[in-house]
Image 1 (cartoon, rainbow, N blue to C red):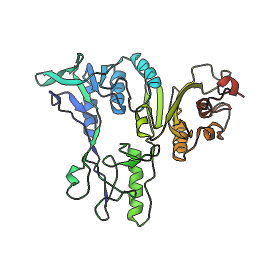
Image 2 (tube, one colour):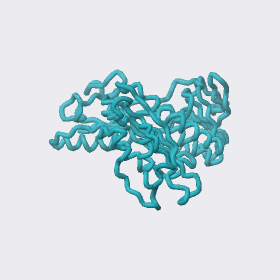
Image 3 (tube, one colour):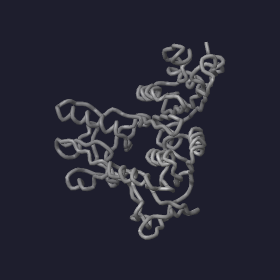
Image 4 (cartoon, helix red, strand yellow):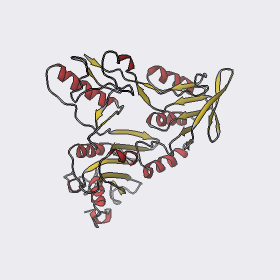
Length: 349
């Protein structure tokens, strides 16, 4: 048997949380409610600046609705991207009517005639006729605690083969932990693609195979207006999970040389690595071009415990219509090594 109890949207006990017009965003019913609200809303407030909150806020902004995102964190995507990238995204969002209020704690929702009209924080208030609460997901597995081992946070405990404490019962998905390659520990990473992998591993083991759940890096991608960004492994807010010295390097590089494309074709990059061994631990890429495929290379490098030296001189193809003679990932690793010839002008040919 395979269990995948999943997760439910966190619904904090704010005063007014049950007012009409206040929504969570988890599953098809929530999606329909939010879509319906967009047909009549004039001012929306999104509580939470993570992936879900940002996607919803962008949709409201593109629909011409005044939208404000409020988050206790100081910046959007605080757990996914570093400040060098989020500063650019926040500026991009402001061009499209997107407003962000960071470092604010939501205290309550106010309403009239049963409908939400305001979001109250510790620093101010915001008019709203639609509110979306997107502050995370919690496991939905406590109902299983009498049958299998569940920890005090409600996560199902599994071994490295995804087997639970019950005979012939396996578990995966948002209510489980998963091996995390950069640190060697375990994390809860609520990504659908990882749940699918867990399903395959559990099925193989149920069929009599001995297959361990491979370690993952939490690789993810999103677009925000004109920008595409991807991340994998350790970021600024997760370095404390690593048992060792962590260093990083931020680089802005052109994808194509000037004689090929004059327009803005920058890729913004950051790489994390062990300061002593140079083993790669994480990376982030962002551009108005689609650079999403390159994050797969960084994810594989982390899983393979590659060093900066290996990535710097790795064999990445070149054709003029695709890229430049030195791929931007090569340049990122060279710059992290502080090689004096790591810049575009020196590596063009």
